[in-house]
Length: 273
Ligand SMILES: [Fe+2]
Ligand SMILES: [Fe+2]
Image (cartoon, rainbow, N blue to C red; front, side, top):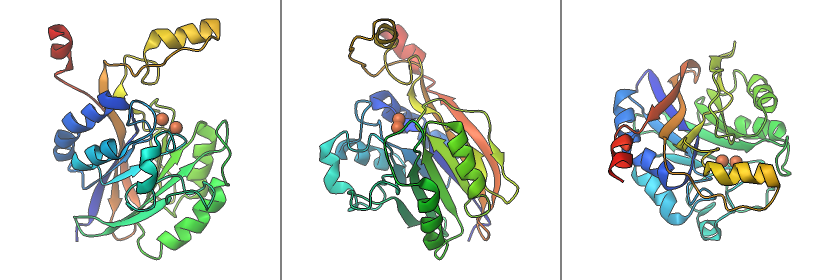
């Protein structure tokens, strides 16, 4: 059994450019950072909104072990039959209990130990959901009977809600990494009782954009308040996330680092186009 594990969590994957980042950046990054396990938020993987069976399969094929999500999980109806059936596709655990799908999973990592992943969603400036603090407490109690290595994807808008949940769970989980805002924050840290934390992992997708969408329609929307089509942008592809090194026996985080890698051959593509 290895003494430590390197666990990566990618922020929201946006559209085809985001999937391209997973296809073309993740394999080399896995080797470079010696990643043992990879989690990715796939709520925007299909055309920028939701996830389809095909895009889910594509992420899995290119090395993503668990796919988390958030408020956009229902955007493509074709994914409904997979929710709750394929255990490595998660929706926030604090959605209503009767909603399709599941919010956590325990996986036997190829390197040996079990890893639990818990997906939660914030409530501040978000759609209605059960209390993430209470649901986290309940879920973590269950997960800790199986493994001390627990990674939480907290899909939420505000930094305060994410920091509060991270502090509340300090010592109970290995890491809490935020997703949803598509903007990577620079506050990576390890709390006193051993939980690694980052407010937002950022976006795996096109950064020459506004949160992954073409720039001009969004500016026009702000200027005019008129409806616009928000197409997924194309350029400035990056894979963003957080890499956490965890002590296998205790589940404590030993280090956390931000990951933000550009797609190297993209400039050539743009010049050729
Ligand atoms: Fe998102
Ligand atoms: Fe979201």
